[in-house]
Length: 304
Length: 311
Figure 1 (cartoon, each protein chain N blue to C red):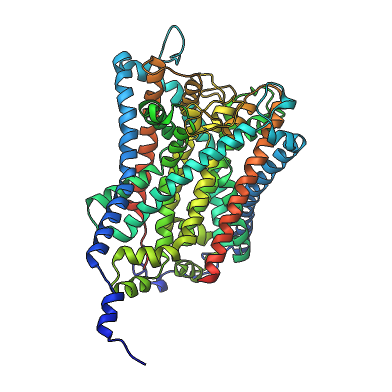
Figure 2: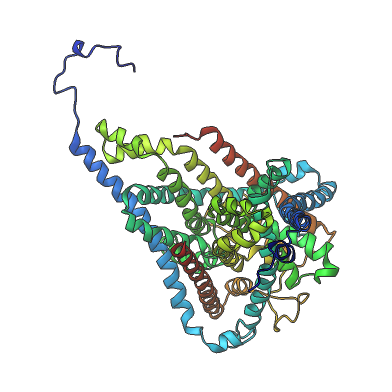
């Protein structure tokens, strides 16, 4: 409404027309604030509920035998040795492949790229890939790595599983690498060029060392995401009952989340407790990785 | 003491060799470009594999049958391929989850951005990040073995596998996504908008509801759409807690089967390449991919179209 439509003096200004009604509005405010805090509290409470349930269920069966035994049909003898070894092997593959691929792509997009069709295409692809469900990557891994490249990867193997997860976390690594590179001040680049260095010499000798803590932080967080991924490994057909540790890249394998999934799906209560113990191990590993990432980030921020 | 002539020293020690440096640079640039191209290859790979097997599938099963059958029994002797059975389960669970995540995530975002002190915010944000980082198989355990028995004390008719428990836990899983993306949007609304509202005599709630939230609307809506897309594609919670029983209908108390649960069921059972089961896998994958792609594109478009720009 235009304020000039009615002249203020035309309207009778009496106290019964303008009712601020503050008491009621402040009461509504309190209700609203209560709900906002309530929602946050509920989210935190659910996290606590989840963690405490799992601790209570799983702590009883968590011992060294559990870590050092293979899967078994008898709950009291079953353990996660094969799963833990499989997870370590797969994560090794993921780290070895995704680090150069992700950092290289990040450097290309942030330092080398000109604004042309190729760069734009890559950027559109990365943002789209980040939204593709992980099980679709599993189907890609099944068709590409297990079947078509089967002679190289050895079918449902450590290598096939690792490469599938590499594709899954690559967009995350690229994005975090770019953010880390962006935090390096442009003055360093300008100084390098002024001394006659090529772009690559500046990147290799100055930008990368400065950005490395940030890149490593992103890398650790991406790996911690890959460790918990279950669906893609299920889709490529990682076995759930394996009584040996992998002995090579072409070896078949199981992984910690797969083992947990298998145990949760069984009807007996004993296996559910084993699953909870497995979850405690998995969450501990995740927590350590996240703590490492936070430590790196803080050190980096202090020294800058 | 003899001083060497500067010219000989510079020739022996300083060799710029710019040609070599430039060559190395172009080689490195090419390699990095090739690494960047992996993302294009991945997209092409996803589209090609899905399309290839889906076309073979559609040669066996006509598309109208795929879209209109009312049963889903591709692994039985009498095969019927009504994708709608799986889609309805996915939609129902996603709707339940967003009904949880929308109020919870949005209110948490408002709380973090508008009500919490910087100190509280600094503690609460990492807690939400932990909630977001919990592996989905853990949420599956929680839904099947904790939430379902808990709900059964109120709902005696609740089956061991059901979509309400899966939907609720899925909602908890996507809440941090809604909260952190919405919080970014709400936090970035300029302070002068709030000050202007306060100057007009509004209370804090009125400022938030009528000024801050509309200003942040594009970010909030896109975070909700991304959360729905995440819920549609989520696998472990629904596979563990919602069961593997393809039923058409919107009863949240009985076992159902989502698209992702079907993919897990088939891949677990060693589908032979070339069999109809293997092709069905990719047909379902294509449907899932198209739904999430549409949601993601819609979310990007919404942000671009409705973003309020300040400064």
